[in-house]
Image 1 (cartoon, each protein chain N blue to C red):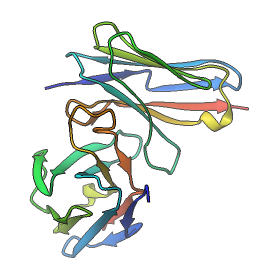
Image 2 (cartoon, rainbow over the protein chains, first blue to last red; image 1 turned 90 degrees about the vertical axis):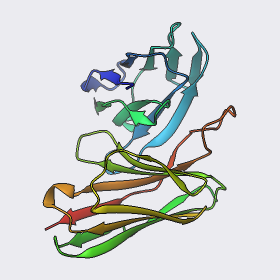
Image 3 (tube, chains in turn purple, yellow; image 1 turned 60 degrees about the vertical axis):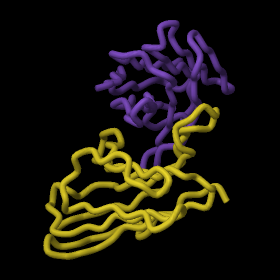
Length: 107
Length: 117
Protein backbone atom coordinates (compact mmCIF):
# COMPACT_ATOMS: atom_id res chain seq x y z
CA UNK A 1 0.00 0.00 0.00
CA UNK A 2 0.88 3.66 0.02
CA UNK A 3 3.79 4.67 2.22
CA UNK A 4 4.70 8.27 2.97
CA UNK A 5 8.26 8.83 4.19
CA UNK A 6 9.14 12.04 5.98
CA UNK A 7 12.56 13.52 6.75
CA UNK A 8 14.25 14.64 8.84
CA UNK A 9 12.91 13.03 11.99
CA UNK A 10 14.20 15.87 14.18
CA UNK A 11 15.40 19.40 13.48
CA UNK A 12 16.80 21.80 16.03
CA UNK A 13 17.31 25.37 14.87
CA UNK A 14 18.28 28.71 16.28
CA UNK A 15 15.45 31.21 16.27
CA UNK A 16 15.54 33.10 12.99
CA UNK A 17 16.96 30.21 10.98
CA UNK A 18 14.96 28.52 8.24
CA UNK A 19 13.50 25.01 8.44
CA UNK A 20 12.38 22.50 5.82
CA UNK A 21 10.72 19.10 6.10
CA UNK A 22 10.21 16.74 3.18
CA UNK A 23 7.68 14.03 2.37
CA UNK A 24 8.12 11.36 -0.26
CA UNK A 25 5.62 8.79 -1.42
CA UNK A 26 6.22 5.54 -3.26
CA UNK A 27 3.01 6.13 -5.23
CA UNK A 28 1.28 9.11 -6.80
CA UNK A 29 -0.85 10.99 -4.33
CA UNK A 30 -4.25 12.45 -5.14
CA UNK A 31 -3.49 15.18 -2.64
CA UNK A 32 -1.35 15.81 0.41
CA UNK A 33 -2.11 17.55 3.65
CA UNK A 34 0.11 19.07 6.32
CA UNK A 35 -0.67 19.15 10.02
CA UNK A 36 1.07 20.65 13.04
CA UNK A 37 0.97 19.13 16.51
CA UNK A 38 2.20 21.26 19.38
CA UNK A 39 3.74 19.47 22.36
CA UNK A 40 0.89 18.02 24.43
CA UNK A 41 -1.62 18.97 21.76
CA UNK A 42 -3.43 17.36 18.87
CA UNK A 43 -2.81 17.61 15.12
CA UNK A 44 -4.15 20.77 13.53
CA UNK A 45 -4.70 21.08 9.80
CA UNK A 46 -2.43 23.55 8.02
CA UNK A 47 -2.99 23.12 4.31
CA UNK A 48 -3.97 20.80 1.48
CA UNK A 49 -2.18 20.58 -1.87
CA UNK A 50 -3.96 19.04 -4.82
CA UNK A 51 -2.39 20.16 -8.09
CA UNK A 52 0.89 19.03 -9.58
CA UNK A 53 3.60 21.62 -8.88
CA UNK A 54 1.33 23.59 -6.55
CA UNK A 55 2.89 26.15 -4.21
CA UNK A 56 0.97 27.74 -1.36
CA UNK A 57 2.09 30.25 1.24
CA UNK A 58 0.85 31.02 4.71
CA UNK A 59 2.85 33.93 6.12
CA UNK A 60 6.31 32.43 6.79
CA UNK A 61 5.27 28.91 5.68
CA UNK A 62 5.66 27.74 2.09
CA UNK A 63 4.20 24.44 0.94
CA UNK A 64 5.10 22.71 -2.32
CA UNK A 65 3.69 19.69 -4.14
CA UNK A 66 6.00 17.99 -6.62
CA UNK A 67 5.34 17.81 -10.33
CA UNK A 68 4.90 14.05 -10.15
CA UNK A 69 2.69 14.36 -7.04
CA UNK A 70 5.00 12.02 -5.15
CA UNK A 71 6.74 14.51 -2.90
CA UNK A 72 6.01 17.61 -0.92
CA UNK A 73 7.84 20.05 1.30
CA UNK A 74 7.11 22.55 4.03
CA UNK A 75 9.54 25.44 4.45
CA UNK A 76 9.44 27.88 7.35
CA UNK A 77 11.34 31.14 6.94
CA UNK A 78 12.89 32.76 10.01
CA UNK A 79 11.60 30.34 12.61
CA UNK A 80 10.07 31.58 15.84
CA UNK A 81 9.59 29.79 19.15
CA UNK A 82 5.89 29.52 18.32
CA UNK A 83 6.82 27.21 15.43
CA UNK A 84 7.85 24.47 17.87
CA UNK A 85 6.00 21.22 17.32
CA UNK A 86 5.82 18.19 15.09
CA UNK A 87 4.89 18.66 11.46
CA UNK A 88 3.16 15.76 9.74
CA UNK A 89 2.38 15.22 6.11
CA UNK A 90 -0.53 12.96 5.27
CA UNK A 91 -1.21 11.36 1.93
CA UNK A 92 -4.92 11.30 2.06
CA UNK A 93 -5.40 8.45 -0.37
CA UNK A 94 -5.69 6.33 2.75
CA UNK A 95 -5.65 8.78 5.69
CA UNK A 96 -2.17 7.78 6.85
CA UNK A 97 0.43 10.12 8.27
CA UNK A 98 4.13 10.39 7.67
CA UNK A 99 6.45 9.86 10.63
CA UNK A 100 6.63 13.59 11.33
CA UNK A 101 9.45 16.06 11.82
CA UNK A 102 9.89 17.39 15.34
CA UNK A 103 11.05 20.99 15.29
CA UNK A 104 12.65 22.62 18.30
CA UNK A 105 13.68 26.27 18.26
CA UNK A 106 16.32 27.76 20.52
CA UNK A 107 15.57 31.37 21.43
CA UNK B 1 -19.37 24.84 16.21
CA UNK B 2 -16.07 23.68 14.72
CA UNK B 3 -14.93 21.37 17.48
CA UNK B 4 -14.53 17.69 18.03
CA UNK B 5 -15.10 16.88 21.69
CA UNK B 6 -13.59 13.81 23.30
CA UNK B 7 -14.29 12.39 26.74
CA UNK B 8 -12.75 11.50 29.06
CA UNK B 9 -9.50 13.47 28.73
CA UNK B 10 -7.70 10.93 30.87
CA UNK B 11 -8.55 7.32 31.66
CA UNK B 12 -6.75 4.79 33.82
CA UNK B 13 -8.00 1.23 33.66
CA UNK B 14 -7.01 -2.24 34.65
CA UNK B 15 -6.65 -5.08 32.20
CA UNK B 16 -9.98 -6.60 33.24
CA UNK B 17 -12.00 -3.38 33.04
CA UNK B 18 -14.51 -2.36 30.42
CA UNK B 19 -14.54 1.31 29.51
CA UNK B 20 -15.53 3.52 26.61
CA UNK B 21 -14.08 6.57 24.90
CA UNK B 22 -16.54 9.03 23.41
CA UNK B 23 -16.32 11.52 20.58
CA UNK B 24 -18.82 14.09 19.38
CA UNK B 25 -18.88 16.56 16.52
CA UNK B 26 -21.54 18.95 15.26
CA UNK B 27 -19.90 20.11 12.06
CA UNK B 28 -22.11 17.97 9.85
CA UNK B 29 -19.17 15.76 8.98
CA UNK B 30 -20.13 12.30 7.74
CA UNK B 31 -16.75 10.61 8.23
CA UNK B 32 -15.28 9.90 11.65
CA UNK B 33 -12.00 8.32 12.62
CA UNK B 34 -10.15 6.76 15.51
CA UNK B 35 -6.38 7.13 15.64
CA UNK B 36 -3.94 5.80 18.22
CA UNK B 37 -0.82 7.81 18.98
CA UNK B 38 2.13 6.60 21.02
CA UNK B 39 4.69 9.06 22.33
CA UNK B 40 6.91 10.56 19.61
CA UNK B 41 5.06 8.64 16.90
CA UNK B 42 2.56 9.72 14.25
CA UNK B 43 -1.16 9.06 14.64
CA UNK B 44 -1.91 5.51 13.55
CA UNK B 45 -5.24 4.91 11.86
CA UNK B 46 -7.51 2.40 13.60
CA UNK B 47 -11.04 2.77 12.23
CA UNK B 48 -12.96 4.89 9.74
CA UNK B 49 -16.72 5.36 9.65
CA UNK B 50 -18.34 6.85 6.61
CA UNK B 51 -22.04 7.68 6.76
CA UNK B 52 -22.23 5.76 10.04
CA UNK B 53 -20.89 2.58 8.47
CA UNK B 54 -17.51 1.07 9.25
CA UNK B 55 -15.45 1.48 6.11
CA UNK B 56 -11.91 0.82 7.34
CA UNK B 57 -10.66 -1.45 10.13
CA UNK B 58 -6.88 -1.48 10.19
CA UNK B 59 -6.65 -5.00 11.60
CA UNK B 60 -7.23 -3.67 15.09
CA UNK B 61 -7.48 -6.30 17.87
CA UNK B 62 -11.02 -7.16 18.90
CA UNK B 63 -10.45 -5.77 22.39
CA UNK B 64 -11.13 -2.42 20.67
CA UNK B 65 -14.72 -2.18 19.47
CA UNK B 66 -15.91 0.94 17.63
CA UNK B 67 -19.47 2.12 17.46
CA UNK B 68 -21.11 4.95 15.54
CA UNK B 69 -24.62 5.45 17.00
CA UNK B 70 -25.38 8.43 14.75
CA UNK B 71 -23.66 10.92 12.48
CA UNK B 72 -22.45 13.05 15.42
CA UNK B 73 -21.17 10.39 17.78
CA UNK B 74 -18.35 7.89 17.74
CA UNK B 75 -17.48 5.55 20.56
CA UNK B 76 -14.56 3.23 21.19
CA UNK B 77 -15.35 0.40 23.60
CA UNK B 78 -12.38 -1.03 25.45
CA UNK B 79 -12.19 -4.46 27.05
CA UNK B 80 -9.35 -6.61 28.31
CA UNK B 81 -6.69 -4.15 27.20
CA UNK B 82 -2.96 -4.66 27.59
CA UNK B 83 -0.43 -2.21 29.05
CA UNK B 84 0.99 -1.68 25.54
CA UNK B 85 -2.40 -0.21 24.56
CA UNK B 86 -1.60 2.82 26.70
CA UNK B 87 -1.58 5.77 24.31
CA UNK B 88 -3.34 8.95 23.23
CA UNK B 89 -6.52 8.07 21.36
CA UNK B 90 -7.52 10.72 18.88
CA UNK B 91 -10.90 11.11 17.26
CA UNK B 92 -11.23 13.07 14.04
CA UNK B 93 -13.97 13.95 11.61
CA UNK B 94 -14.14 15.15 8.03
CA UNK B 95 -16.32 15.32 5.02
CA UNK B 96 -16.13 11.96 3.26
CA UNK B 97 -13.77 11.45 0.30
CA UNK B 98 -14.97 13.30 -2.71
CA UNK B 99 -14.27 16.07 -5.15
CA UNK B 100 -14.91 18.98 -2.82
CA UNK B 101 -11.82 20.86 -1.63
CA UNK B 102 -12.75 20.25 1.99
CA UNK B 103 -13.04 16.49 1.65
CA UNK B 104 -10.76 14.55 3.97
CA UNK B 105 -9.58 17.61 5.90
CA UNK B 106 -9.36 16.15 9.38
CA UNK B 107 -10.52 18.02 12.45
CA UNK B 108 -9.10 16.34 15.54
CA UNK B 109 -10.34 16.28 19.08
CA UNK B 110 -7.96 16.91 21.96
CA UNK B 111 -7.65 13.19 22.58
CA UNK B 112 -8.19 10.76 25.43
CA UNK B 113 -5.01 9.71 27.18
CA UNK B 114 -5.36 6.09 28.19
CA UNK B 115 -3.22 4.28 30.73
CA UNK B 116 -3.66 0.53 31.15
CA UNK B 117 -2.25 -0.89 34.37
